Image 1 (cartoon, rainbow, N blue to C red):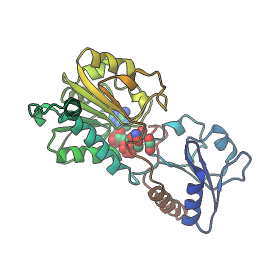
Image 2: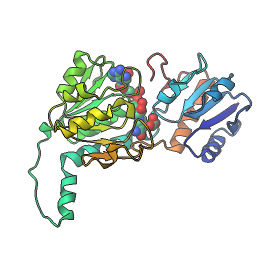
Image 3: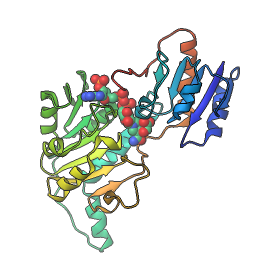
Image 4: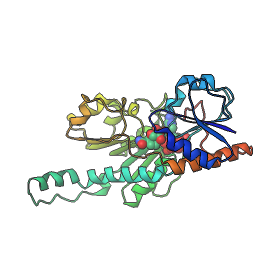
Amino acid sequence: MRISFCCSDTKPQPWVDGLKAAFPDAEVSLWSAGAEPADYAVVWMPPQQFFDEQLKLKGIFNIGAGVDALMKLRLPAGVPVVRLDDAGMSVQMAEFVCHAVIRHFREFDGYEADVAEGKWSYRKPRLRTDYPIGVMGLGVLGERVSRALAQFDFPVNGWSRSPKAIEGVQCFSGDVGGQGFQDFLAASRILVCLLPLTSETRGIMNMDTLSRLRTGGYVINVARGSHLVDGDLITLIDNGHLAGATLDVFHVEPLPADHPFWKHPKITVTPHTSARTLREESIAQIAGKVRAVERGERVAGIVDPLRGY
Ligand code: NAP
Ligand code: GLV
């Protein structure tokens, strides 16, 4: 069996070494133009040339949860694309989002500012019932995040395309713009985006949808930058409808030095780090799935090219 590794933005050698250890009988190599055809590809944002040349693939394994970069390419017809299915990401995402929510809800920014001025001052405790949280996307990550938030007794709403039942979470479903979506937004004050980026979800956080959140709303985007219309967020923060945002993902990454998000006092920026790909867990998951595919079994995490996730 031949496995080709082709990832931009990732130090390749530890991956190649890890894949060699997981597949002792396979030939594992770092892809270069003109390389021999492989059976399986392990990729992250590969160039189109990779797929134009690799014509014998039996499976494409993405070393991330989101496949939006892959879906923009011409992929070989009928070859399954398999995304990471948690692989240690959901616990990271839960801790990141809980931290962002609690930091906002408990006003830690305000306390830090007070302490910096040597002030010992209390703020009036806020009521959880005044801070209902809406999680868009109830897949592998969104479900874990909404359960974690519910553990802190926040009212949690969730929205997904198909109906779900999650203990402690009021679940809404349906299409973007449909009644379920409108009801979900109206019931939420803090909005967390954990959707895949598709033609339906691009720009989903915009003037219209963010205006539907309760006044004093707060946005946490941990999915993709293109889910958000940046200028609409800034307008709604500056006019007081929204209290602020924590943003981990951006239209262009790294976030350009002159982007207004960097210096906005009510926006917290992190460098696309809310849930990192963990190499060992990911290789173990991919190795298990390649073996299952070789046995003719169906594996979890196969992307539906029509849905785009
Ligand atoms: P997933 O398991 O595929 O879940 C996606 C969820 O979104 C599902 O609940 C799905 O609904 C829902 N959804 C998709 N399209 C929709 C639509 N048009 N309307 C309503 N709901 C829709 O994905 P995941 O593993 O949770 O990952 C989610 C995203 O997180 C990834 O695509 C990636 O972009 C992002 N991510 C970011 C980081 C980071 O570090 N910032 C790390 C990992 C992942 P159904 O359940 O009905 O299909
Ligand atoms: C990271 O953003 C991922 O999609 O895994």
